[in-house]
Length: 217
Image (cartoon, rainbow, N blue to C red; front, side, top):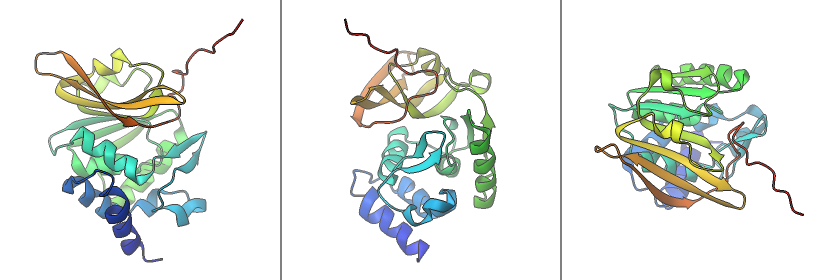
């Protein structure tokens, strides 16, 4: 397989037509070798419009959603970023390419170890993956200009929103299946929080944020 051609087709035939015209995002997805962030058993699916299992009940986002997420966050070269849910490290690498500094938090040590190795191979030196619980964010290194949460929550999480710098933007998916929506949450210069619904998207829940079971009598 010609990886460069497959990556070009992914960007031009999947991501760009799916309402992602931001050239900086498309360029980043062309530059970062997605195939190097996919588990070996799923190498042939590296550029497919599908979610790829990672273990621990987690999966990579499909490329179109990675593109939509990045475009919504409008990352800049001066942005300090928090990513909650490192996963394969691919989104971490994209954020590292687009931003000044990235800290990525994941509960699973094997994810962090693999992502750290992949980031090093990709030449991304400004992104660090750490083992930790990001359920309430990672306040020690905040505030952040960009926060990307790659799992869902039944409701918004004020403790994470509080870690946004003025003008900062947070992407997260809120709700329970089958009614989930991706939100862009922005802290205005005045300090007020503004929320915008972007699109419907189902993701696995943040561990510890699962909705309480419903009982019917």
